[in-house]
Length: 88
Image (cartoon, rainbow, N blue to C red):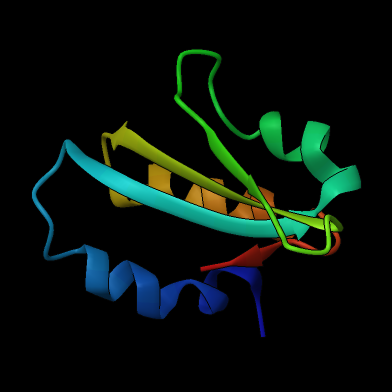
């Protein structure tokens, strides 16, 4: 399966949105990947982190203004390249 096929369903669902729009990104990742995940976002993005009860994982929530479906998919594509990241 090629990389674009992984995101075809998401692309189809998001094609109904009007852009630009606010989009809520959510990820769960091992705490040691914090710096890697921060690189996905702009310095002006507000990132909210919450630790898991065991302290091994963090959840990230970011509500970001996006210009297109491709901008959203690009964030998910970058996140999927980081081992251990779960997209919600």
